[in-house]
Image 1 (tube, rainbow, N blue to C red):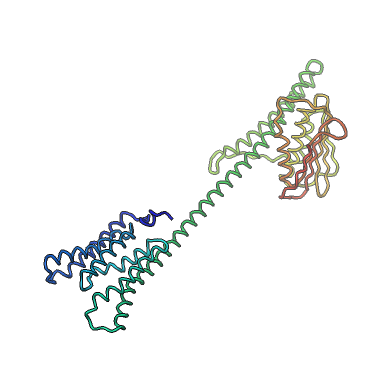
Image 2 (image 1 turned 180 degrees about the vertical axis):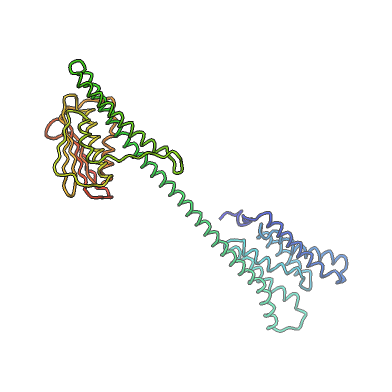
Length: 409
């Protein structure tokens, strides 16, 4: 504990100063006015007023420097004990001093007022009532009454201090809890924003990368066939236009969701998410070198699972167009069982570098999608020959928890 906080307890306001000064002035006037007609000599009157004021004026420091108040009042009381033959009205300050020290002095140091008060409770009656014919019982009664005037205010002051400390502790606990709640809410907001950004990044990557890859391949094929087979070039241009319109529609849908506020007039337009029935068209539009194989019968699945299967197939075909090479072929195998759906995309390419490579964001997006649906995904070079293979196995039901991600390096 800091020494300055013991000598000068913090927290006292200007209003407290005014109240304490008013208390000190009031008790000084009371302790002096009652003796105006007592017939003191001038010198005795000056000493009396000075010692009475010395006993009550320190009360102005009771909340700002309670130990200094105790020292000044103790010195004034000792001088009154030595110079006066009877107690004075200014001793009314004693209970206030005891309460103030107990209330604003922390720790065992506050008990010093009990020690000083105990000595004063014995020495005062012995000094002022020695001329009276009293017995031991009366002396004990006087001592007990004087000590009670110190002990009772002290107990009240300590209780008041405990109540105030408990209240302050509750306030600090509430503030800490509120701060933790704000920090937790801010962290949850950041996590939600990060999750939203990752989701939007996956959607944009899948849409833009696949659409541009298809458009590039179709444009190159159309250019090669423009002189020999103009009808093939026309079909390539139609595919490019259709793919571009679809990508533009998807981009507008995502941007519309981002721009629309909760109460804004600019409401986003929503379109149905891709389903399992859209996969054949996806494979057909990707390239003539890609083919679709289906085992089993497609059954009803959740929109989230259908979108995951569609995006995984789309991204795998995008990587095929970018890396497999111009002479490679790809096959997309969909296997439907009552409990699971498996997507297997493999190619026989030798692998080429592509300047538009996304740095692994496509594979990362596939892993995130599949794991979020409770499935597993393997992506890596084929073991049975040249090429690359992507296999995703997903449970047919809604599985909210993620499974272990056994990645192939």
